[in-house]
Image (tube, rainbow, N blue to C red):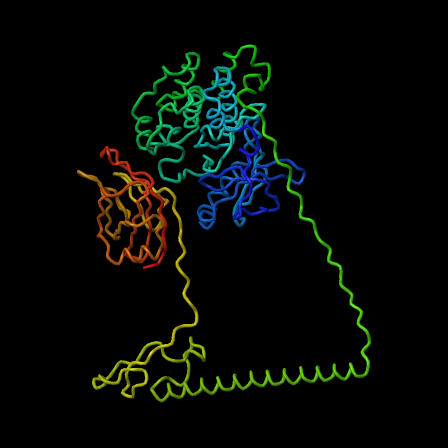
Length: 543
């Protein structure tokens, strides 16, 4: 993070040069929702433009949620948030632009210099708590507060990325039905599919503060199920934290949401510990040391220079009489050639008409209707269904047979469209829920869906309406590979012993829908709390 090349990556061949009038200058990063670019307003102010991934942009439900999130984010105003500048949920692809914050993320700063000193952590926590006041005041729960979503600007931290946050007063939707966010910074209620409230962000703030002080997540690293189990069932080890920070972080990490501190209480607590320094502004020396050298922001990309075409004027000498004669002869030859070509085309068309008429006559002789049906064009008047062979037609069933045999139908000139893939990210299955083909995003709190997780001595997927086929090939299954695998399915029960994170499972519903299930998290070691998360793609009427 010591120079611009580490912050600003050059555009690649698949990056658009312009998004909705914003000329892109560099890449800033990428996430689960899309790519982020540096661009500028017309006045030259730098902005961060996020462009949604194509597979999400093709999902009408995602666009609806994205539009709702943009409308909610417009209501957020605060000194410690990155303000939304512009957005278009109906764009191709959808996009949004926020003020660009020149500074590293907390995650990057800690990776570069290690744990932060106590005064810097206090400045950090106070600023993020003020940001949460503005966010919660607009009726929004962030849901994914973590070190990479906290940027360190010269005048204090900025909370960014409302990509998966939702307006609390508009919807109770969660993308997985239970766990939206990053496992190491989730609250217990997120991990157990409980109610998500403003207090959920306070728990994440406590974890973020502990990360800043320790240089690593308080609940450790490892597989997501393991980390989530610790968050839900174990008390955090606060003895590793600097003593001055322990009371505040303990209050933020209270298991019961109602016992956690409020943003206002956190700000006041930090100001008391900072003492006189709290009135010195938000950019003390210790804070500038944490930020490191500021990278130079690339200049706006200039508009491409328009080249004015100059008409070419050619002066031709007047032809002499012999030249004029030659010109006349060439013109006559060209006219003759054109006439011969046109005549050939007419004769070809006439011959085709005769051949077509001959074909119709032969069809009529063989028993085809002489008049096309109401839904047929004159060129496809041959019946699409063959005549049933008579009892004596055993030796004359070809199209050229004379015994009333079945005739070969002509293929339709219009090709049927391939089924469109609809993505459903991170569906959730556990011992009390199920997933429905009709709406996988609607987490069913019962066992009446099409796909269930059942665990006895081992765990398996079961269905009353669908058949499973586990793929053993390289990742990247398609509709065709699922069709092939499902030609010999493994039945309506699929043991999960042979699966792991990344395993691909093809599923065929009795309605004709085909789905691809890609396992993201398989947690079946502790059977009473077993669960599976997976990305699901459905092709409707594809069997």
